[in-house]
Length: 201
Image (cartoon, rainbow, N blue to C red; front, side):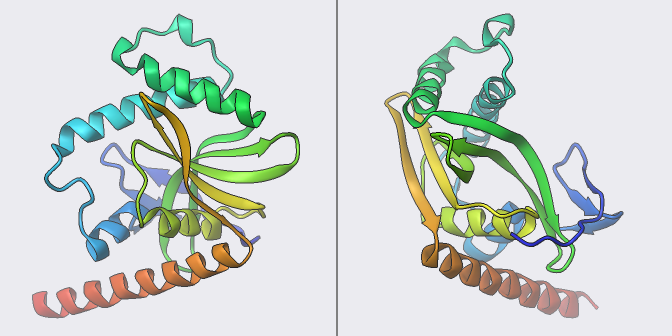
């Protein structure tokens, strides 16, 4: 991660980000525009609602709140149990939860799920997933660049009713390669935007 000061990040109800009052694309918007919609053909709204509800529960737990004080869809209890199992197995200590980050240099923003310390040692940037995929590395790299602090590694964590497992784990050379790939995607998005703007002019 870089150590440059980041302008104030804001996000509206439509999940649109601004950096210092200037509208910027989100990480997921860039990935969707360049690589396509990953929920296409899978009941998009249902997946989004279910994923948002699960993420909210993980955030509550990560913040150290007592989940029993909240009313939530009990159909998500297996995911909650899997999340707690991951915390116990990895000795997870939450440092930041649902953190908004942005890069003024590269013009984008986003929100990563958690910054954690595992087994009292290494610091990891974590993004929760109902299912992992090839674009996880790009998303993690984007957050790593924009986060403003150094981390040992980045990982996508798949959580579902069957348990938990890591998807992508980036550190060292694999993290550097993912960052280079993200820069290529970001440049591609800019080219697409410039071409479309030229058509509209």
